[in-house]
Length: 411
Image 1 (cartoon, helix red, strand yellow):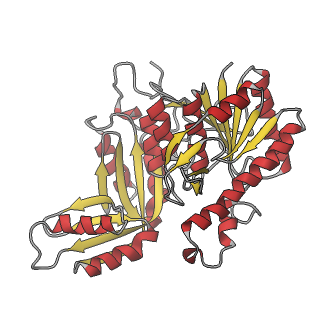
Image 2 (tube, rainbow, N blue to C red):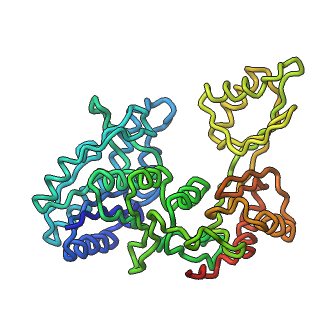
Image 3 (tube, rainbow, N blue to C red):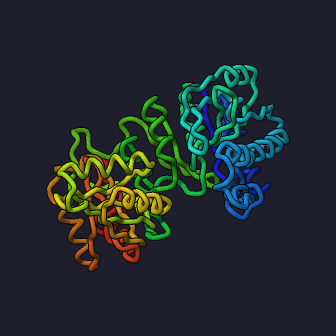
């Protein structure tokens, strides 16, 4: 019997009718002869009674609440979801057992609010599966060695599911959501964005890390480390979705790709802060070392760094603006800050070194009269920093430039 992990997102368990659909997916897997572990997110989104953001909004001043106490509050959403879904499964005569993340064996560090998994102790889950019981696990959470409740950061239920899949040697982790797989672009921006049938871990990690919100990057990291097949699919259709597994990229067997099919997908991330920073006139030549060490010591991780002899450009998320500015003032650096920036990225296996790709990116921007403020590239990505007002236009232009509405030819 194969072990299958089924993770259901907040929109999938939002109301009773949707939870009934979820129950049928569990029934279907059991009837196929699989052993099933269910992982759930909190029900719904901000405004829904038990959604994570709704719970957080109950605190009048979250900054004054210790992080450990916030985790206690936020973990309630997934626990409520697990208990409620279990009642639907029992109506289908399925024997179930509700477990918190800690009870399911997820042990984390004590970085409350964004805890990292240290290990998964699968014995409890293994015993339940052997007894024919379906564990329903509250996602997004674990416990420290001392037994304190932690949460795993936004998107943490994906991480829960893949971590359990790794520990149990699952045949597949199904991430059920409200879309039918990973798209070539955000369908709200590009209505003809295509569902990608298969992806390698490296490609999906870059897509997720650069703005695609269908699966959390940390879940992909765990999947890659333990070679866990992950399938992103819709709760509400029979589509097979997107399979993420070793060797599932779209390169041909010899590792080649022509420029027309060099790109797998386009992502975007908005509301970034761009800084232009200059050192004090008397600062020694190691000013950049001093700058980035100071930022790091204050918990600021920078992105899109363009370093010059007399200045540096970089970006930070908006919530890090205040601490970045304070750090720069404290060390005597001059700066200019620009809000309302966005980055748009193209992702594809081995685009680096393939003639014509960068030229086509620049052509798409020039034809759309979009100013590029900064750029960066890696083996599998090219990222552009733009004015926020140009973000959607850039995504659409790049999607068209690389013919992403067309199926990649099979070789």
